[in-house]
Image 1 (cartoon, rainbow, N blue to C red):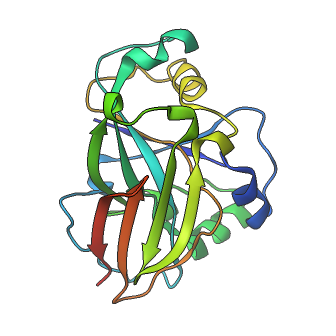
Image 2 (image 1 turned 90 degrees about the vertical axis):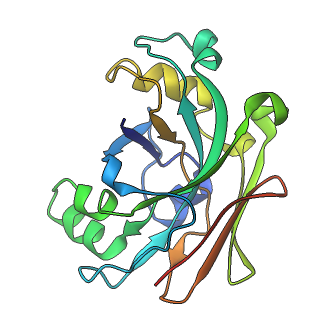
Image 3 (image 1 turned 135 degrees about the vertical axis):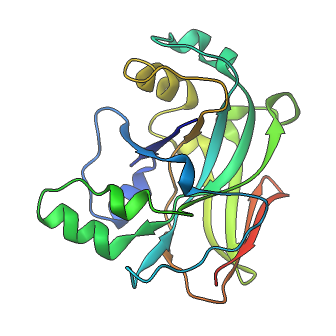
Length: 203
């Protein structure tokens, strides 16, 4: 399986990182070794001193497809989950300054914690879906799908032009404003609506 990630999909997050607003979804990949499942702890890596949390809604692809039209995109996922796109911000800034790819800052081991999944049928309106992240009980990030620059259908249509989607692939759909550093000892909990989906610690 592969992990497809969308960057710069919430205007307020674009502004907080002083990035340009994209004309198309910004796409990058993480390997399967980035996944962190079942509430396993995230071990802070030695190569960074500035790991940031980015909470995101995650689509689980349920069948193979390519060149998918937006109007059919809903047929390619039946479940939505919550995940974290951990980013080594110091490494990313170094790579960007040199005009280099920044996979080492995004795709390292354990950089994609993933929680439980909910059936789309149980969620309701996907265009008005709340989610949030707390750290040590304090609200850090809060988002709603109505604030996305590119909705789920647009994302699937776009990425499927370049990558054949296969059953089990995950699409991380972008993070809202409020990203910031995590520290050893932090307890992260993520929610869709008011249902806890993600719960783990940084060690």
